[in-house]
Image 1 (cartoon, rainbow, N blue to C red):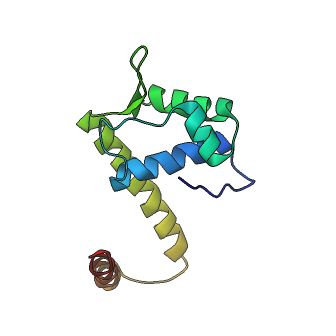
Image 2: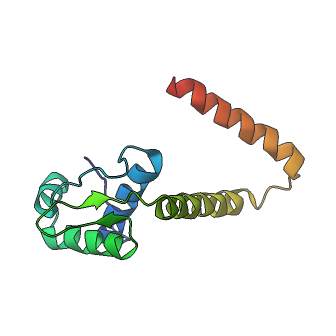
Length: 126
């Protein structure tokens, strides 16, 4: 796992964002075992306390769970996972709308462009 950290945002938030992206994209599947805090800290070359904070926050959000004497796992709760997807999508839409705000364009002109881009990405993934 490789993450390029920026200097603006706290590292634990960047770790959380990276892990959330992996969950949303399906790279990390529901029920999958997470790396230990030390393993992830070693992989990312960061302090284990930083990973601990990211994991704690994700546990509070119910995105991961840890049973006594067992590794943390990705949530299998469909409500939690769907909520994460909605939040991720809302953030993307907000950024997109902010980026195109200066352009005076009607929604009916914009939608075919979005549909085409989505189709292109699906073709590229195959």
